Each structure stands twice: as C-alpha cells, then as structure tokens.
Image (cartoon, rainbow, N blue to C red):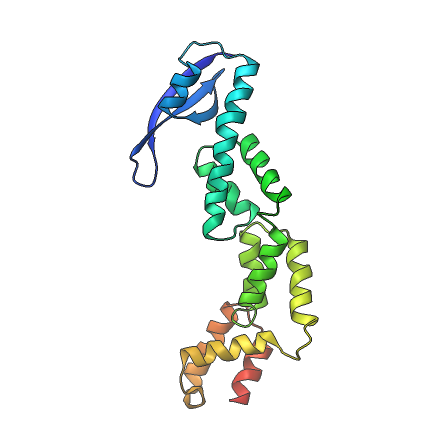
Length: 211
C-alpha cells in the first residue's frame, strides 16, 4: 500500500482547523491532523504496511470516530441514519462509521426502537400518525419498527383517548381562538390545512362539527 496523496484543507464549524485527507492507493482512507502525520511519519510515496495501517485506524481514526459520535449523542438522541450522516460529514469512511455504530448499539447508546417510541409518545397528541410515520421514515427508522410502536401507542393505551382527535382539536384551537365563529370559507381552508398534515377528512369534520 502506497500513500498516493495528502490533501490539505480546513475543517471545523468556523473552518479554522487544518486537516489532511490521506489517500492510499488512490483511494481516500482517513482524515488526519499534522501531529498524526508527524507521529506516523507519513508523506506522499511512503509505503504503508498493513500493520501500520491497522494501527492508525485503531489508535487514531476509530478512537476519534467514537469520541465524535458520543459528543453528538451527548446533546440529543439520534437515529442510526442521522449519526451516519453526521460522521460522513466529518470525513469518516463507511467501514469506520459502521464499526462505530455497532459499538454504540452494543452499549445501547443508540437504539432506533427506543428513539421511535420516545418520538411517537412526544408527538402523538400533536401531529397526525401519518406525519409521525413520514418523519420517522425520513430519519431512517425501519418501517416495521414504526408500525409496531404506532400500533402499540395508539391502540393499546390503557386510557380511552383518540390521539388523532386530540391532535386535530389542538391544531384547530392553535390556529383559531374562536373556531365556532369560523365562516364556511375559513372552515374549508382549515379542513384543507389539516388534511395536508395527514389527518383524515372524517376526523377533521367530526372535530369541526363538535365545536
């Protein structure tokens, strides 16, 4: 294996840090900093043994990827997909990202099922189930996981609550302080707005008729 290129560029939120993309056999392999390059004595044209390559990955790259991931998760929970994107943006390769995610899953630092459950419990009386499903799908949650938790949270609650009706009523009163005074035209606009948010026409009309 030969180091075929070392590309200098800036990283960080304010682009105030200098880093180097290391290419081995013309493929991007990892991101290092000047102290790393000096410590490992790397330069273009240097032959890099498998032993040294593994050492760089284990001692520096993988270690930093774990630190980066834990720092991200310190502020808020993330899905696997969201964390993947964050690490990809930090110039980690898929091999390192997948290895890091498996480490985090092993210690339950990330758990898509837990994330979905918390998200649904937070949003179920505020948004439509369709909107919730769409958002979780965008976040990379498996559809089977979403359906399982949606079913449990909406249908197996010990409380006799229709969360869709609750969410519609909240949306109506948030938009109009006195919804009983709405004109026919305003009601039509409100129905269209709620429908676009994923609520069913029947439940929207039921809520409006009860006002």
